Image (tube, rainbow, N blue to C red):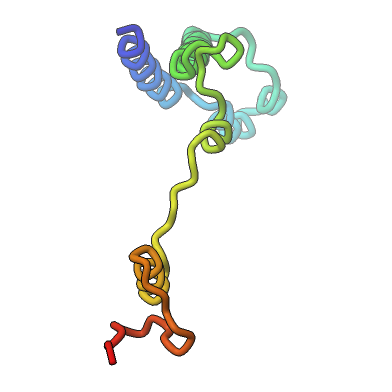
Amino acid sequence: MIYTILIIVQVVIAISLVALILLQHGKGADAGAAFGSGASGTVFGAKGSANFMSRATAALATLFFLSSLTLAYIVNGGGVASGGGSGSVTDQLSQQPAAQQAPANNATSSEDANQASGQEQSSDDQGNGPKIPD
């Protein structure tokens, strides 16, 4: 339940961040106008106090960061230190048994099948087909 709520909050914050960032006026946009108007000292200087848009962006970025950390903590199951988590990906892979692969060619599989059924192959028979009785 809390996971679903946090995902919804995360998406809303992300969309809001994108909208706020796209609506803001960039610092470089004033560079051309400043050179022509004689106020070249303010082109790359300090902007003064932050306005509402930049403060809202900083607050949303902080909330996005905190919700991301919270979601990561929840997905991990409370952390590895508490014993509730499953560990890293490499730990999970080392705990899984290795899957046995199928034989690459038919000769090997026919040899294995003959040995499993108790039949022995002669040295001239390389598993190239069924053995014809004499």
